[in-house]
Amino acid sequence: MERWTPEVKSSERETRLLRLVGKSRKLFVFLREHRHEIFDEKFQEELEAMYRDSGQGEEPQPPALLCMGVLLQGYLQVSDAEAVRLSATDNCWRMVLATLAQQGDAPAFSQGGLQQFRERLIRHDMDRRLLERTVELARQTRAFDWKKLPKSVRVAVDSRPLEGAGRVEDTINLLGHAGRKIAECIATELEMSFEEVCQEAGAPLLAASSTKAALDIDWNDAEQKNEALNRLCEQLDSLSAWVRERRPETELTPLSHYIEALVQVKQQDLESTPEGEVQIRQGVAEDRRVSIEDAEMRHGRKSKSKRFNGYKQHLGTHLDTELVLACAVTPANRPEEEAAPQLQKDMARMGVELADVTAPVGVRSILEHLGLPTQALKRAPARGPPQRAWC
Image (cartoon, rainbow, N blue to C red; front, side, top):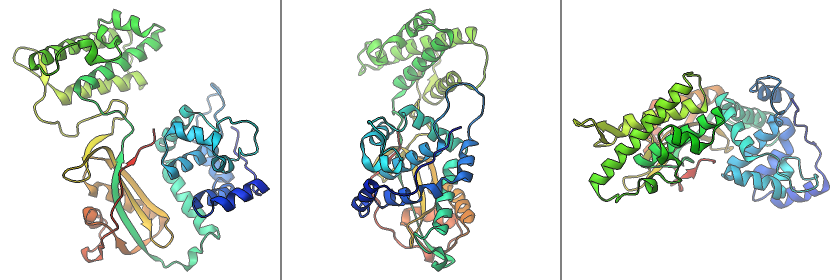
């Protein structure tokens, strides 16, 4: 596997860019000056270990290059599509990614490649290893003198909404979305067209671009709405039976993912009637799934009046250096204290002893689970608007 070997010495053009960007985008300067230290041979070996050497398929891009792209994306909070564009058109990105001297405006990576790499990074816990690596470098580099810091550190712990990237849908659209994805997956496996699968499986509603438009009813009429729901469920049952006949295997594939999603939506949102039909369940199921593409997204509340869909992100930040020492992400509907074990594990891994903690009252439960006395609490600055998950 090819490794990323960027130049250490800055060119004249890079030096000019570093001077221009230094005051407003300090991380660009840090990453350009220390990228060869962050992604040394040893760490690149760790990144390469995420890949299975099957000898098949295309040679993957250097993992360190993609990892740097993920860092820049997280710093600016941009989507995958925007990250691809910036890697081709923004000179600061190109400087850090070591493509500034290349001719043309080809992006450093593809949108699909970046998404797949990030998923691989998370699946192997290398996102957490990257956090550790950053602190390791902070201890080694002259960016600041780690030895001058007290062993007992001041940390800010805070939580904020993280908007999910998956589409949030109502019950009818969740069912239709899952059904369409099942039909698309089985069509690919059987080398059939999507339309052929929908017709042969007895699910023509799924061939339409909009499930509700295909049902063509007055959605304000409760009786028509219930009849449409049962018609859709009958076609989904027909599709499921058709798929089982042609593909009885149960190995983990994208198809099995969407089959499980369909089953989950039915169980959480529907209930049987004495007449043998189905209807929308009364009340909201606990831990209700809201998106087909993102299984972990949930409804959450920033306050009594403000709702959001996605996750909560929890950070423990070193107040003297602004280094993030601990992080955790939980579904939006989970209590704050569920993030405590992961934050505690991260801080223990970093070898830090908490001397003083700044936190808003809303995350007091996290600190109590960390074993901190109530009198150590201080109010943190007001939190900003929700962040958005990369998509």
